[in-house]
Length: 204
Image: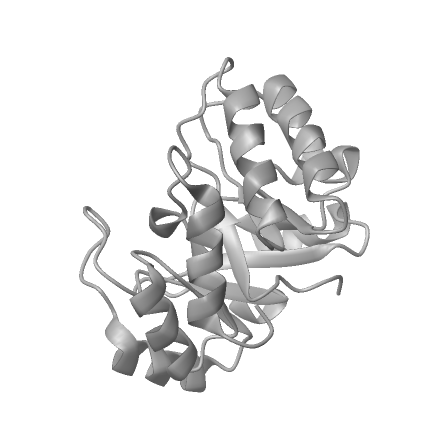
């Protein structure tokens, strides 16, 4: 097993086009200056070539910070990412593991359907913690906490997270949070990171 995610991980917007990389990298740089320790690069609309180029730039900006790619297992070594994060439609964890060269393997999980390969992952995200349009009912702190205790895997909360939800997720037993909504990439990512880290508290 490689390096687990930090307490606060930002998720990229998911809508970046080929020409959007420079502005995103500026926003990422501001977030890193504010103390962001990790990024999940999830850009399904980018082809492998542009995604690899962006991932290498993210690696440079993050410096020693944690970088994961969503789904693209085959690109992880080439951009020196720390991990791959597999969604429900991704390669099974058992097939992905030999391709990672000892790097970290994470998976996205939900209450239903539960992942059958959860035990093979190094960590999981469980979502949606809070309300997210089109993602089904929110788990909420109580149900999230019960599922974390039941499953036992190191679990990060995902879905609908701002500072208030970050506090609730930590109290419910999350090892950390993956944040998209609360990152405010287009406006004030530096301020967003400061607020999220303050909400998590010690160790963010």
